[in-house]
Structures are given as C-alpha cells and as structure tokens.
Image (cartoon, rainbow, N blue to C red; front, top):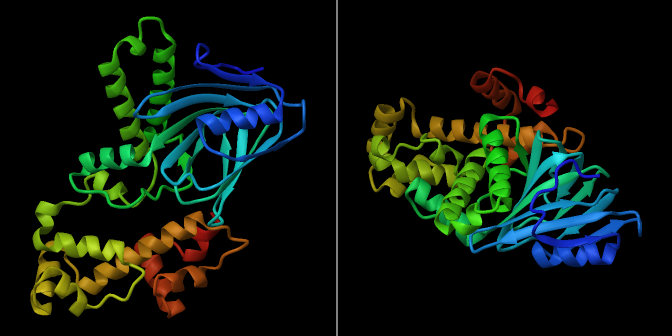
Length: 325
C-alpha cells in the first residue's frame, strides 16, 4: 500500500487494468507504452492542472515499465517518494532513482524508458516549455531561445534538490487543504513560480552558471558576448580571429581584454571551458560503453597525453578517475 497518497480529492484513475492505467497517464501526461502483468497492478493517479503546471501523484504497486516518446513541448519531472526506478533515454544516459535521493527530468527532445519497482511512488510535474523558459528568462535577464538541456538525473540530496522536493510536497499538501491554495489563486501562482525556480536551481543545465551569478556581464563588458559564444560553440572550431569578430575588436584588443578581465588568453579560456564540457560528459558517461579518448575528441582534444595533463591540472584528478565514478 502507498505510504502517503497526495491529492486524494483529485483522483483521475484507480485501477488494476493496464489499459485503463495507460489511458489515464496518457490523458494527464503523454502517450506511452505501459508494460506489466495484467491484473497485477494497483495503479493510482491523482492530478491537478492549471496554466502553469500539472502536479500528479502516481503509483503502480507492481513491476511496470513505461516507454515514452519525446515530450516535445513539455518538461516532465519525476520526484521519487518511495521505492525506485531505473531509467534510460535515447542519448544513452542511464539513471537510478532511490527514494528521496534522486529524481528525473524528461527533456522535450529525448525518448525515455522508466522501469518502476513495485513500491515506487512519485510526485510528477508536467511543465510547458513556454512557461519554464519564460520564467528562466526573467530570472537571468535575457532571452532563452532553446530548450533547457537538463541533466537526466536530479540530485535530491543536495540543498537545492531538497528545496525542490519540499516545495512540491508543500504545493501538493496545500492544494489538498480546505481553504488552502485552491481558494487563493494569487498565492497558488506564487508558490508554483517558486517551484519552477527551485527546479531550475536543482537541475544541471546550460544556464546553471547564469542562475548562480557566475556570469557577470557588467564585469565582462565587451567580453560578455564572446564568453557566451565560446560556451555555446565549444565543440566548434574557435580561433582568436573568429572571437575578435564576435567582439567587434582587433585580435590584439581581444587579448588585452581577456588578460585584464579574466587573467588568461582567449584560447586558454576556450580550453578551460572545453575541459569543463569533457568533465560533465565523463560524469554522465557509462564507463562500460564510452572511452575517455572518444569524449576528449568530441571536444577537440586530439593529443591525449597533453589533454590528460591539462585535465589533471584543472580538476586535480585524471579523466579516467572521473569516468569511473
């Protein structure tokens, strides 16, 4: 039996039928294939929606597997309350979500397969792309013109992760309480906005540094568009001449500005950003399927001994040690 069932006044479906369970989750979240033993499940789905997001409580109480297409215009966030899931997505990334320790973000462009343990229970958010990306743009003060590329896994044991989980549980609890948020639309919108902020801080993505204030446009001055260009095109060929054109200055002026503002040359900065991209890929990679060499080549490091030395100088460990984590 579930340990704590949320949104009990908002029952969408309670069933032992695979077909009914699939149809209900399809209506609330997205089309999918549901695999499990007929009559073995004891599925419950409770959910409530408004223009900002959908919040639902879901459990199957049986071994089940959901095979889902790309959500395209939505982000789905699975927060593990009890039990566990084992998941993989179309780019090969895999995740395991123990209760209250890990969660998942299903990005708009990835296909996902998630296998549930019999005792698994989740709170699941469905957030429209337009809403989340507009909210992010307000937070960082500039337009967001691409999907937020969240890491597959959410670490719910960190301070931001715990904030996210607690804020979603608070939202669910308040929506259940008579005289609570349902009767206070302004307060509900503010709490849902807080949930979106917590999600953006808890997940890792290409805007994480901007949210954390590590992008200081005023300090960088004319270097700001160059720095942004480097981070967005780190896998492309970058030369001082190209970067000078981006900044609309001479190569000499570009070198002087980098030295003054960042204390290093433009190409040293490019190397540092690329090494960071390598590290992110190594931490996500399956050591049984991917090699350090392949990931290094992906980011333009062709001399492996030199790359390993540079990586160790920046991160104080060999890339092979990062991969084995």
